Image (cartoon, rainbow, N blue to C red; front, side, top):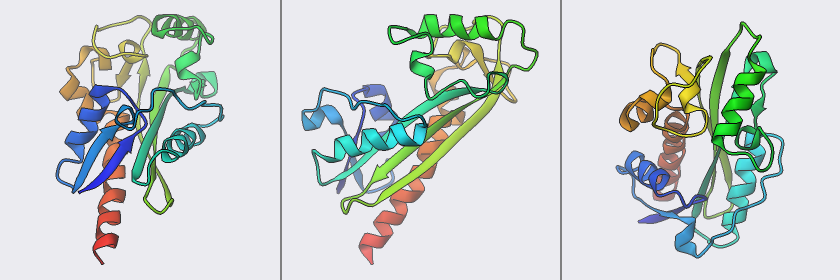
Length: 200
């Protein structure tokens, strides 16, 4: 079995990725299993750049396949902000609650509340080849929070075609349609191709 190391210590994320890749011949591990506790410095101005930084940082510690992701919320009437700065929208010391409050404040007078989440996944294979793919889900930002599940901006975001925020959905509901799920499905296609190439 080939190994994949993820640039996350989040057990929930690891098990979600394991589940999606379960029918492929890969064993999935977190970066903690390589003994890495520190994080890469994400100083790029795009999701692609930050995702690549995280993958390259991890690749220093293993010859196996590595995979990383970076996610942002892009609000159309705010010219795409918070975007790559979603996690620290309200400042370096911000938390999810402060970020949501800042977003609601900036959208106070905006009629257009359309937005999308995007996840970029980077894969670096055993030979150092780099692959990137994305997943996106479009929706609307509410004027007040709804729901207790999820994290980040989930309690403000209603995906198109639904009447519930991500935070009002059960995990299995959200994971069926989320940006990360879509990016992971695309990543799965890349990993399937890598398997086929190694068999030839």
